[in-house]
Length: 365
Figure: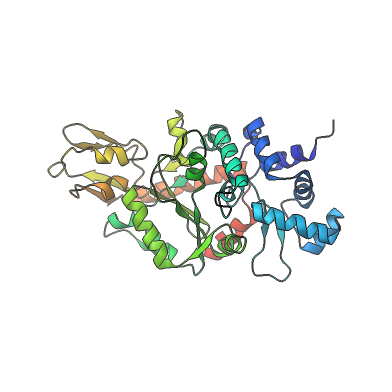
């Protein structure tokens, strides 16, 4: 039997960044069928990941120009298609699942309307499946950034997320999809962490702003967001120049796997926490804030170096400044950077990055 247009679209979507064939479930099909009309799904399949200009799409699909314009505008509002920003003859291309993709745009720019509420509820049902069948299967492939407020003096500019973000003159912030998804499921509001804390940079940011999925922010505003997130214990993560998150252990898909008895996505970074046994009051706050269970409480707090990812959430929450972050040796830093490259390489071998990301990586060098 010839597969229907939704089957064809899903078969492509499960090859995009961090998606794997195992997520092809009834729950994912429900998201796709709700996010695309059959007309839109057919267009996405015909256009393909390479995309094209309006005239190229009209020729390729045979859709009458006025109808094509209407379809593309609707898909743009829903966040299922990318439109090249700032161009008189823009490229259009369907989005994958992540970076940027359907999961990010699920809660962007449609604040509180019925379409968004149902879409987030559908993602809520699918979220544990996505984590179990895809993210947890991809192993460790992300590295957290150490909280800026507790970076040691010998941290390099390349290890300081605040310094890296200053390189970009166009930054956009959008609501955290993980927390919005969790909020609209039976779990309710998972936490009081900062919601507008995920970021795009450069071309991706321009696209997000122009299509109503995000708002532009200054570097000073970014600095304020980072400080606020550090107070809450959120983990800086991602690739500045492409996308950046401030993950919380309550809802983040990168941390959910460990709650399901599997491995979280984070490789250790270049820093680790050290507890001052004298000043430690054994209050237990660091144990509550650690997103990976690396802290234990005995006579005082103790760090499990094998689990610590160097995020600094424990240090930023210590009321007596009894925890400091220490930079690892150059040999250890080199080893961990190599481990990150290998981990991300494995993800790249199994899934496809959006062309936007390739350009962003090239332009950031």
